[in-house]
Image (cartoon, rainbow, N blue to C red; front, side, top):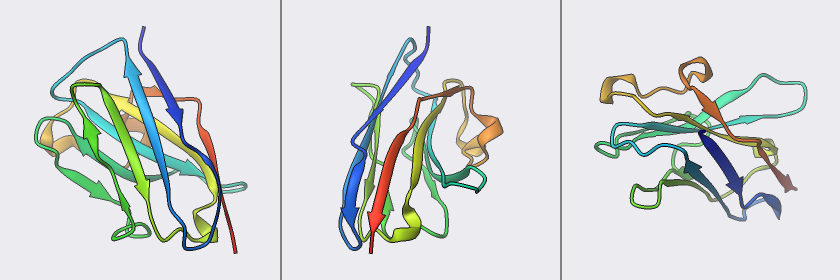
Length: 127
C-alpha cells in the first residue's frame, strides 16, 4: 500500500523559510516523478514543483522559481520542498504527490498525472 506522509508545515512571517518533507512508502522506484502541489482557500489546486528521480530533472511553477527547490533523497524515498523568501500568497495547504512509474519526458505539474497523494500540510505566511 502506497503512502505519502508530509511534515514540516507551519506559520512563518513573510520573507522567512520553511522546509516540507514527504516520506513515501509502499514502493521504491528509480523512475518516479514526485511533485508538490498547493491549494489556497477558494482556489484550484496548482502544481508547485516536480522532480524525476532518475536524473533529478525538475520543473517549477513560475510563481516559485528562484525561491523554492525540490531536493530528493532516493535512498530514503523522500522528497522535500525548501521554501525561501515566502510571501503571503504562498499560504495554502501543500500536498505531496507521486507517480511511481514515470519517465523523464513525463515530469509534470498537472495533478491528474499523479497516482498517489498525501494528506496535506498547512503553510501560513503572514505579512
